[in-house]
Length: 423
Image (cartoon, rainbow, N blue to C red; front, top):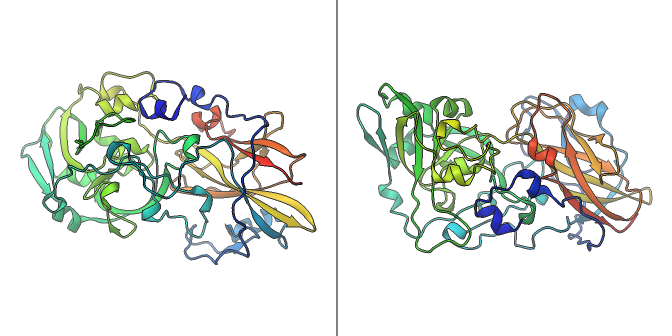
């Protein structure tokens, strides 16, 4: 499957997307610039109410886990990091393209537990703003459909009603290895809960779905994407997810490429449901058909086929996922040792054990330093690793808890490979 296949609404399964991820030998290593010294001290509490300490890689852990830490390299020296191989060559943290073909891929390799929030200018972009976007100062959200009194919500009234909505992760359903999995970011949001807006709408009897739409006209024809920016939810889905109309990201008004002046955010659901440039909320009946965007993203949000009706779509929620974000190279007592640093996210309940393996012939082992308290936004973890021999290694994570669904993770979707040259 090509990069364009993913963005052209391919109906191939997750398994086919993941095919071939167990990479064999023959790839060249790439090394990042060395990182010297210890990282800066914790700037903010990641786990509320806990005391923290730091091990040699600079990862913060609750003091209650101090005795569980495996830290043989406390006095080691960090030599640098290794690049993952066989991934896209495109630039990271820089916007590229325009309108529907515009992208920004976040560089996950630089993430640190003491700074878990993605800077706004580095927050991923799946679609850039249209050149035809109306004046944001006069922006209104039309509230209509099956309600007693249709009305327009002015942008200033939404901004005045906005309140802190917390820190939430967002991931594009088309987040793939060719993009270095860079369509994944965490932001601190402010906005207005959708449930509050619906409570004041006084819906008529028979209303069962909420159709949320965004501005979707562009000056140029797209080479990679299908126009369509709307999703139909049940009121219960929106309330359970804590969905809100966002007007701020990281303490500042939304940038244009991130949906300004107002966008939908559905915590825990894939980014395709978080409609940008929201201009209409329509209350509709149960039998409303699925929108073009819902149909385009059906396979990528793990639906069963492409349902005709919106009511037959399962919630587009992000299941439990995990992957490495960098491989650190250390010298410890004159010996080379590696440390895998990664993140876990998604799912509806914290997991107890995250497992890791290096190539299919090896057994899974528990990740050394992993403790998940919540599923959103993300949890940092580390694992010390002494490869058996030089060569190419494919790093795969797994969750073995029967009640936890992790179809992408189970398929090998988030496998990443690295070339080890020095032992």
